[in-house]
Length: 130
Image (tube, rainbow, N blue to C red):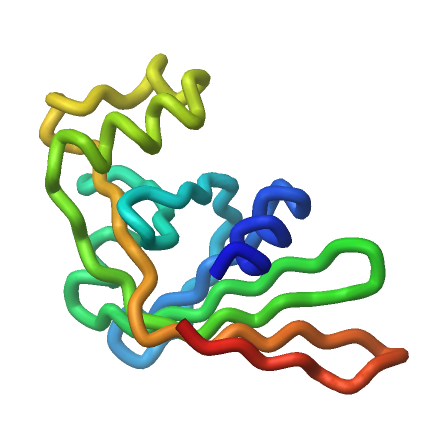
């Protein structure tokens, strides 16, 4: 899990894929945090991505940095604890202009049943599960 966190953090931007009915949806994300021994991302509950995850929590995350890419296949699980939201917002204080732990909109989700595949054109893929 730490290797995935480090890669996503260093990449800065990663892409989250969900489905809406039979239509794939992909968008850029940038938040990643470790809290309570789990890997977390953040969004807003009013956004379509939140509704898509609620309907189908299976997602993929993809990021690319320095000739290596990560594909993370997982489920996302909402954690509505104040502490989990606060930890994410403390890690990304710039988000506090839009989000607050008590706003009813801030949503943090942790990664579950994950398979992370690190690939490049010059080396065999490396696979980790957590």
